[in-house]
Length: 413
Picture (spheres, rainbow, N blue to C red):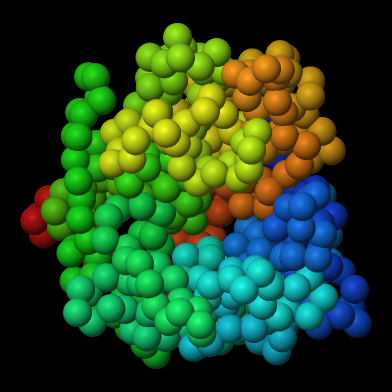
């Protein structure tokens, strides 16, 4: 384990523990409940609502907790094991996919939400990680849940793209036609022993490229929001790997993160929240409501409409593996400057200095604390990468897609 020496690294360890506490304390631990192990979506506005993606991050948090001796191995094993039982027996879904939001007590669909492929992907990544770490029944159940997922059912056969959503009322809608946070889906889908997709799905989605100032050739996402460059990287170690087209996704996220920071500095005259240590535009709570549109160039959206000056701490923190120096400096600035932004689970979800008076979120969101805890741990020790990448289906998926060490990719290319 990495030795913590600097003030900045002491702070990120503090944030790691606080984020871990979210997944320990905002979960259903009633052993008589059908929803055992489900993790709350957010702390204030959804008291009885769990997010299946939060559960995925929570399974990763259990691994981290054992490694840091914050929880006994046996307790974490039992908790992970019973959580997977909940998904095997109680959580509502179809064809191996689960509803985005479910009731904390029953596991049944809430808010008339969609059957979510990406949130199922995040959950199953957490299950696979826990399975590789704990072994035994946890690994057996994680594999059972993985094999249930009918990836082909979620594929639009006319476009060869994954749909973005499905509900019984509307059927399928949308398309994963551009690069975003969905890389994990191709890795998991192509190696499925039950319902595999063809690797062409990975190579056929659109890769639009642009520059931002002197940062060249960024493969950008639709709204340039940072979580789209982070979520798959929390699980998959893309370092020093290229695909058959020569794309290095890790290097691409470094460039996109640097562009996000540069964009904030370039727009300091428009938004007083922005600055060299106040950056990280990503989906989060804002003064009006939650927005998935906060982002930076390059992108396809109109940022003059989408942005309002809100910055999310998880933007910079979730990019710590890409920009460690800049991310740690941002954390130090936020911690030392805005006491209202810090609370029982560390940094809250967002802040904005551009209204009539400064606004600070009062709550925490599971997926935002999740990307923080996983990326900090990967930066410190590489724990999540280590165990997720051990999985035979993950290894096979990367191999089938041709995503491999750079020297090998050059030969294949």
